[in-house]
Length: 253
Image 1 (spheres, rainbow, N blue to C red):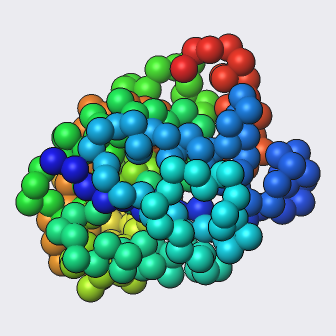
Image 2: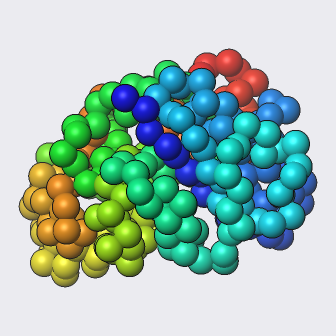
């Protein structure tokens, strides 16, 4: 089964980080001569499970070589939530759609295909979850954070399979979840301050958090396990950028 997908590429950077990378558009950061955006487009296109690809990006990127391979261009807004909404609306008639960010330096076609094939059909939101021990120590510094739960230390990825109708109705909650997906206190505050207490006491469990997320969004949420860790390794700052450069040079990934 194939899905349509959209890539969010509206993120801007500034200051020393922008000077270091040579761009103010995060998706245009290059690793080993290839931009993060090009890597995402290629991975989706070559996965064999994606049909059309839409790109939500700054208007100045329209018509440039960087958007080669994209079927639909959608001007980005300053708001990340609005950009997700625009991507969902572009495929509003689809049952499911795939959302991928544009800051994954090592994303590849096999990782995309594997994630999609692990997503159950009845889920409204599928999100890859990784336990700390699943990630090779040699690439672990590239993972920014783990959320400590009763049943382990977890971090998430940056590709999702979404039920389009459910997510259009619950876009505010989807947007908040997207922004806070790698922050323990951020997710706890979103899901309810009872979970803050459970986190502090070391009692919160992954299953209960996922169930609560489904109640808020209005559909079944699934933490997809066993995926390739490359879909959780993103570039958020100077440190993760430099680490990605070194990892690329070492050919460890």
